[in-house]
Length: 596
Image (cartoon, rainbow, N blue to C red; front, side):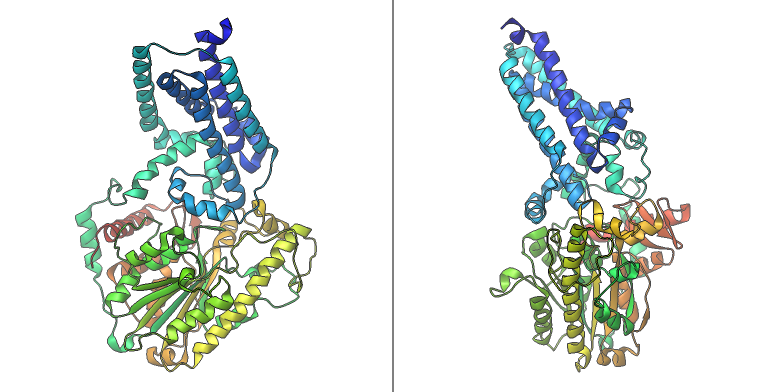
């Protein structure tokens, strides 16, 4: 009994328990790189300290507050292990790490994860076992209670002050963050690997500083931003109204996980899955969209297209966008997403962006998420529109959303199996089954508009590459280079087809055949490309985007990647940095100052 109530034994035990939980978190933080990376962490003393210190300090903070060892251990350990487990799973099924701000979309995350098979691993059971063993030890072996109230108050205040100091001076210090990471070849082009190279708790705590910008985007601005200067720069471009006699209807469509895998020339197709797409491309302006995301986070591509922003932000009120510009030009703006209205807060956000009306699956009692329902419904909305005003719609499909079953597939088989494993063949054939159906229905949709007497232009594009197996197993088995440390791998991992098609009435009105090879660029530039083909200059910010596009046409702040003068890079030239910062200043002003 004496040892269990001995204060030194309790203090030392709690410290060791905190270190143990930190090590378990670090083991999970290595994710798919496993034990070798975990052992590598141990060779970086400062990095090790930055990951082990948080649970130790939290345990002692709670010990001083509660006075009871078991409370001090169980609650911090539970949250550390839970966050680490979520990170471990999230990286494997979605390819991106757990960030502190993910708690803002926890509802969406719960729904998404239900679609995936959790990758079981001995580390998961080891972490849970470590938590249980630590809890039992703290309950039955640590019995020292701190009864002196004055000591507890002073110790709690001092420990809390230490937490604040460490967070502000160390964990959010850019220099500390940059200088403490494991040397890994793949961190240069991958946010996930860059995160993993620092363990888990260290980069996770560092990401907490993003809460402010996420919740209050107008209050957290770069030090170099000058509102008056940004206003003057934007005003120097000036808005240009769309000519009344040059207005056409626009239907934009973002297709879920829509990729043209035939471009890799590694699949032995038994059916020409992409023939309808290639026929449409032959009579369109078509190119590649370079998305920021992979396998998910579809709103990044979606909202950058609608706003022209170079990076995703939150939309808590009415905001300037290309949708709102079109609305102010007399267009009726509406759209359809065959998903739930609450997902990614699309119902309020789409209203903030300027849509007068937006439909979701809840609005159609007999509806479903298939393209069999999606394309005819988009067409019905167009045909039943108010024909006295021009029309803009933005529509998002759901069919082909991952994951795709790995345990079985059914005929027809769209590819020959070749050297593919059973699970990879099943995943790929199931994905292609959906894409084959999408392409046929997409062509039927285009054909239905071809001879419409009203001019209409269709802008269609994919949102992100498909998730094809844990750790991207299908891509790797096919020998497709997705190594983000190389320009080719980065582009393979993020390139999606887009096309801009016009019916005969639109071609005659605009005097342009809308056929040819289009450029490749980030989603922010796509709406401007469509406007240019239509002969519209657009709003001031769109003109600023076009100016930047002449030298920088891939902007991926999320991944820290740009393309300047045709070269993929992580560091812009001084001139490129000046141009990009100039555009960003105008973007921030436009985002934080609602015009109309």
